Length: 335
Image 1 (cartoon, rainbow, N blue to C red):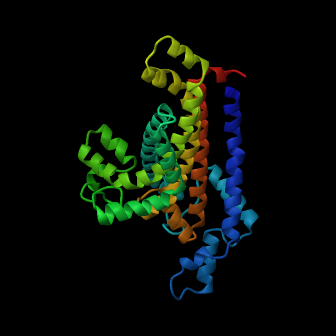
Image 2: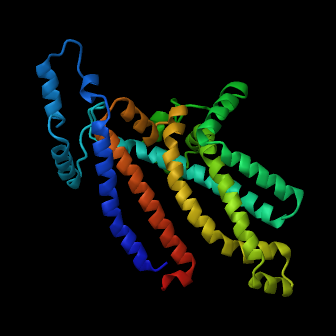
Image 3: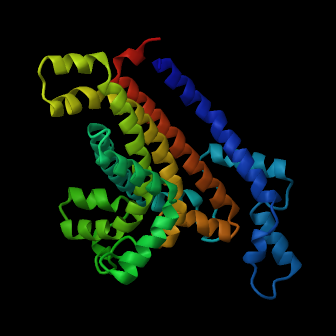
């Protein structure tokens, strides 16, 4: 892939985000339900309802509303949340770090588990162990993350209550932890008691998100490893007398990682989208649970901003991994 392609994709991100914003904006205004009806107190008259509709710009036509919203968005203001009565960007800024940390830990788990399983399965190809890993990966991948979440709630919350199954941090420690990227900040500051509590609360939801992705990583990495092991340069390495382990890890694995890395990027973006249900199940205070609350409350400005945030994350992750693939493979830097 030529680096110019990255620039083209970066420029295409603008109309992509515009299209996402337009579709979500229109859909949220044509589906049944009135968000104002959820805000009005008992006994409010028609004049009060009309004032609220005018305050949020809902008394105008959809094209006019979209034009006004687009003008405000271009200046960095995405509206005020109907439910929380706060600027939606500040709400997202408060919740997004929690989701990014959860998604990052889940992706590390997925790559670690899937990578180990894929390498072992490729190394033992034709052995019963390889067949067992392949069968297990197929079963794990067939079960969606939210079902794994329910299983872990039952397992770790009821049968074997080893892990906390709600929240992000022990309430006793919350006053010491600060805000934002709790895991990264407390890890850098050496507050390992708080780090342990964060990881304990994160363990079950992160594992629920990681397992289906790990299964896919294992299957793709095994296929890439088998292709690499059958290549000429691996044959030459074996003829030079290199050990089987060194051939596997030093010769075949580096060349099999690139397609797995590209897949992992796409899966990471989808994994972040999967946090919507997982965060709700585990009462985890991230942007996913915020999205559910926004939909339930018909909070139009917040829904639009959350969807755009997910779209922006998806684009940014794919661009970052495309750049990383080019950096790792010099042959892709030129057409």
